[in-house]
Image (cartoon, each protein chain N blue to C red):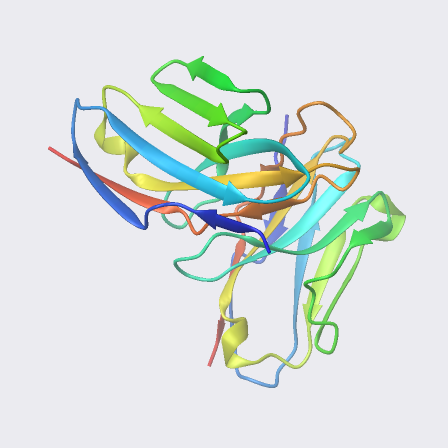
Amino acid sequence: GQNIDQPTEMTATEGAIVQINCTYQTSGFNGLFWYQQHAGEAPTFLSYNVLDGLEEKGRFSSFLSRSKGYSYLLLKELQMKDSASYLCAVRYSGATNKLIFGTGTLLAVQP
Amino acid sequence: EAGVAQSPRYKIIEKRQSVAFWCNPISGHATLYWYQQILGQGPKLLIQFQNNGVVDDSQLPKDRFSAERLKGVDSTLKIQPAKLEDSAVYLCASSLDPGGASYEQYFGPGTRLTVT
Protein backbone atom coordinates (compact mmCIF):
# COMPACT_ATOMS: atom_id res chain seq x y z
CA GLY A 1 0.00 0.00 0.00
CA GLN A 2 0.92 3.65 -0.04
CA ASN A 3 1.65 4.90 3.44
CA ILE A 4 2.27 8.59 3.76
CA ASP A 5 3.17 9.57 7.29
CA GLN A 6 3.32 13.02 8.81
CA PRO A 7 2.89 14.25 12.37
CA THR A 8 -0.68 14.94 13.39
CA GLU A 9 -0.09 18.21 15.19
CA MET A 10 2.70 20.71 15.80
CA THR A 11 2.94 23.93 17.74
CA ALA A 12 5.39 26.75 17.10
CA THR A 13 5.94 30.36 18.11
CA GLU A 14 5.44 33.40 15.94
CA GLY A 15 8.70 34.41 14.27
CA ALA A 16 10.27 30.98 14.69
CA ILE A 17 11.11 28.23 12.18
CA VAL A 18 9.23 24.95 11.95
CA GLN A 19 9.93 21.80 9.94
CA ILE A 20 7.11 19.42 9.00
CA ASN A 21 8.28 15.97 7.93
CA CYS A 22 6.69 13.52 5.54
CA THR A 23 7.73 9.97 4.79
CA TYR A 24 6.26 7.81 2.11
CA GLN A 25 6.32 4.26 0.83
CA THR A 26 5.12 4.13 -2.70
CA SER A 27 6.18 2.50 -5.89
CA GLY A 28 6.13 4.55 -9.05
CA PHE A 29 6.98 7.75 -7.19
CA ASN A 30 6.95 10.70 -9.53
CA GLY A 31 6.73 13.82 -7.45
CA LEU A 32 5.65 15.19 -4.10
CA PHE A 33 3.37 18.12 -3.39
CA TRP A 34 2.79 20.20 -0.28
CA TYR A 35 -0.57 21.91 0.16
CA GLN A 36 -1.79 24.33 2.82
CA GLN A 37 -5.36 24.06 4.05
CA HIS A 38 -6.94 26.58 6.39
CA ALA A 39 -9.90 25.38 8.40
CA GLY A 40 -13.01 25.19 6.26
CA GLU A 41 -11.17 26.08 3.07
CA ALA A 42 -9.80 24.26 0.05
CA PRO A 43 -6.18 23.11 -0.12
CA THR A 44 -3.86 25.55 -1.88
CA PHE A 45 -0.62 24.59 -3.59
CA LEU A 46 2.65 25.39 -1.83
CA SER A 47 5.41 23.42 -3.52
CA TYR A 48 6.35 20.56 -5.82
CA ASN A 49 9.50 18.40 -5.70
CA VAL A 50 10.43 15.69 -8.15
CA LEU A 51 14.24 15.80 -7.89
CA ASP A 52 16.36 15.55 -4.76
CA GLY A 53 17.19 18.78 -3.04
CA LEU A 54 15.72 21.94 -1.68
CA GLU A 55 13.15 24.17 -3.39
CA GLU A 56 12.86 27.62 -1.86
CA LYS A 57 9.91 29.91 -2.30
CA GLY A 58 9.92 32.93 -0.02
CA ARG A 59 9.37 31.91 3.59
CA PHE A 60 8.57 28.34 2.57
CA SER A 61 11.06 25.69 1.44
CA SER A 62 10.54 22.03 0.60
CA PHE A 63 13.14 19.28 0.56
CA LEU A 64 13.07 15.85 -1.05
CA SER A 65 15.21 12.74 -0.72
CA ARG A 66 13.90 10.06 -3.05
CA SER A 67 16.26 7.37 -1.81
CA LYS A 68 15.03 7.85 1.75
CA GLY A 69 11.36 8.36 0.87
CA TYR A 70 11.46 11.60 2.84
CA SER A 71 10.41 15.19 2.44
CA TYR A 72 10.05 18.17 4.70
CA LEU A 73 8.39 21.55 4.52
CA LEU A 74 10.25 24.37 6.23
CA LEU A 75 8.40 27.48 7.30
CA LYS A 76 10.48 30.48 8.37
CA GLU A 77 9.51 33.67 10.18
CA LEU A 78 6.24 32.14 11.25
CA GLN A 79 3.15 34.32 11.22
CA MET A 80 -0.18 33.75 12.91
CA LYS A 81 -1.78 33.27 9.50
CA ASP A 82 0.40 30.20 8.96
CA SER A 83 -1.80 28.31 11.42
CA ALA A 84 -3.31 25.67 9.12
CA SER A 85 -3.12 22.04 8.11
CA TYR A 86 -0.21 21.09 5.84
CA LEU A 87 -0.83 18.19 3.51
CA CYS A 88 1.87 16.06 1.93
CA ALA A 89 0.77 14.32 -1.30
CA VAL A 90 2.65 11.84 -3.47
CA ARG A 91 2.07 11.51 -7.19
CA TYR A 92 2.17 8.26 -9.12
CA SER A 93 4.03 7.97 -12.38
CA GLY A 94 1.89 7.43 -15.46
CA ALA A 95 -0.85 9.38 -17.10
CA THR A 96 -3.36 9.62 -14.30
CA ASN A 97 -1.64 12.21 -12.08
CA LYS A 98 -3.16 10.43 -9.11
CA LEU A 99 -2.25 11.97 -5.77
CA ILE A 100 -2.21 10.13 -2.47
CA PHE A 101 -2.55 12.53 0.45
CA GLY A 102 -1.28 12.15 3.96
CA THR A 103 -3.59 12.96 6.84
CA GLY A 104 -2.10 16.42 7.23
CA THR A 105 -0.19 18.16 10.00
CA LEU A 106 -2.18 20.73 11.96
CA LEU A 107 0.17 23.59 12.80
CA ALA A 108 -0.74 26.04 15.55
CA VAL A 109 1.29 29.25 15.66
CA GLN A 110 1.25 30.90 19.05
CA PRO A 111 2.14 34.51 19.88
CA GLU B 1 -8.70 33.57 -13.98
CA ALA B 2 -11.78 32.10 -12.31
CA GLY B 3 -11.15 29.22 -9.98
CA VAL B 4 -12.91 25.90 -9.54
CA ALA B 5 -16.57 26.47 -8.67
CA GLN B 6 -18.65 24.13 -6.56
CA SER B 7 -22.21 24.15 -5.28
CA PRO B 8 -23.83 23.89 -2.90
CA ARG B 9 -21.35 24.89 -0.20
CA TYR B 10 -23.27 23.14 2.54
CA LYS B 11 -25.86 20.38 2.57
CA ILE B 12 -27.65 18.59 5.37
CA ILE B 13 -29.68 15.48 4.59
CA GLU B 14 -31.06 12.48 6.40
CA LYS B 15 -29.64 9.03 5.87
CA ARG B 16 -31.08 7.16 2.90
CA GLN B 17 -31.77 10.43 1.08
CA SER B 18 -30.07 11.42 -2.16
CA VAL B 19 -27.78 14.35 -2.82
CA ALA B 20 -25.93 15.80 -5.80
CA PHE B 21 -22.93 18.09 -6.01
CA TRP B 22 -21.88 20.20 -8.95
CA CYS B 23 -18.42 21.29 -10.09
CA ASN B 24 -17.23 23.65 -12.80
CA PRO B 25 -13.46 23.35 -13.36
CA ILE B 26 -11.05 26.02 -14.51
CA SER B 27 -11.55 26.74 -18.19
CA GLY B 28 -9.29 24.60 -20.36
CA HIS B 29 -8.47 22.06 -17.67
CA ALA B 30 -8.82 18.60 -19.13
CA THR B 31 -8.65 16.65 -15.89
CA LEU B 32 -11.23 16.79 -13.12
CA TYR B 33 -11.09 15.06 -9.74
CA TRP B 34 -13.58 14.43 -6.96
CA TYR B 35 -12.15 13.92 -3.49
CA GLN B 36 -13.76 13.02 -0.19
CA GLN B 37 -12.21 14.59 2.90
CA ILE B 38 -13.37 13.28 6.24
CA LEU B 39 -12.68 15.52 9.22
CA GLY B 40 -9.09 15.17 10.39
CA GLN B 41 -7.97 13.28 7.30
CA GLY B 42 -6.40 14.12 3.97
CA PRO B 43 -8.44 14.14 0.77
CA LYS B 44 -9.16 10.73 -0.75
CA LEU B 45 -9.61 10.47 -4.52
CA LEU B 46 -13.03 9.14 -5.49
CA ILE B 47 -12.94 9.56 -9.24
CA GLN B 48 -10.80 11.16 -11.93
CA PHE B 49 -11.95 12.24 -15.38
CA GLN B 50 -9.79 12.99 -18.40
CA ASN B 51 -12.07 15.12 -20.57
CA ASN B 52 -15.33 13.15 -20.29
CA GLY B 53 -13.78 9.73 -19.76
CA VAL B 54 -13.14 8.04 -16.41
CA VAL B 55 -9.47 7.18 -15.81
CA ASP B 56 -9.66 6.14 -12.15
CA ASP B 57 -12.68 5.26 -10.03
CA SER B 58 -11.07 2.53 -7.97
CA GLN B 59 -12.08 4.11 -4.64
CA LEU B 60 -15.59 5.15 -5.61
CA PRO B 61 -18.29 3.18 -3.70
CA LYS B 62 -20.18 2.36 -6.86
CA ASP B 63 -23.17 0.88 -5.08
CA ARG B 64 -24.16 4.36 -3.90
CA PHE B 65 -21.91 6.92 -5.59
CA SER B 66 -22.01 7.96 -9.21
CA ALA B 67 -20.38 10.73 -11.19
CA GLU B 68 -20.49 12.07 -14.68
CA ARG B 69 -18.77 14.72 -16.72
CA LEU B 70 -20.84 15.44 -19.75
CA LYS B 71 -19.16 17.33 -22.61
CA GLY B 72 -15.88 17.23 -20.72
CA VAL B 73 -16.55 20.36 -18.68
CA ASP B 74 -18.92 20.41 -15.67
CA SER B 75 -19.31 17.41 -13.45
CA THR B 76 -21.84 16.11 -10.94
CA LEU B 77 -21.29 13.68 -8.09
CA LYS B 78 -24.32 11.89 -6.67
CA ILE B 79 -24.87 9.84 -3.54
CA GLN B 80 -27.93 7.61 -3.37
CA PRO B 81 -28.76 6.56 -0.69
CA ALA B 82 -26.57 8.46 1.76
CA LYS B 83 -25.14 6.88 4.89
CA LEU B 84 -23.95 8.52 8.09
CA GLU B 85 -20.32 7.78 7.18
CA ASP B 86 -20.68 9.88 4.01
CA SER B 87 -20.52 13.03 6.15
CA ALA B 88 -17.45 14.80 4.78
CA VAL B 89 -16.28 17.64 2.59
CA TYR B 90 -16.42 16.81 -1.10
CA LEU B 91 -13.69 18.61 -2.99
CA CYS B 92 -13.51 19.07 -6.71
CA ALA B 93 -10.15 19.81 -8.34
CA SER B 94 -8.91 20.30 -11.86
CA SER B 95 -5.56 20.30 -13.64
CA LEU B 96 -4.36 21.22 -17.09
CA ASP B 97 -2.92 18.00 -18.39
CA PRO B 98 -1.67 15.04 -16.37
CA GLY B 99 1.05 14.45 -18.90
CA GLY B 100 2.76 17.70 -18.05
CA ALA B 101 5.90 17.96 -15.98
CA SER B 102 4.30 19.70 -13.02
CA TYR B 103 0.58 19.52 -13.10
CA GLU B 104 -0.71 21.25 -10.05
CA GLN B 105 -4.25 20.50 -9.01
CA TYR B 106 -6.47 23.47 -8.23
CA PHE B 107 -9.16 22.85 -5.65
CA GLY B 108 -12.63 24.29 -5.32
CA PRO B 109 -14.06 25.46 -1.98
CA GLY B 110 -15.77 22.13 -1.37
CA THR B 111 -19.25 21.03 -0.32
CA ARG B 112 -19.67 20.16 3.33
CA LEU B 113 -22.16 17.30 3.61
CA THR B 114 -23.77 16.34 6.91
CA VAL B 115 -25.84 13.17 6.99
CA THR B 116 -28.10 12.86 10.05
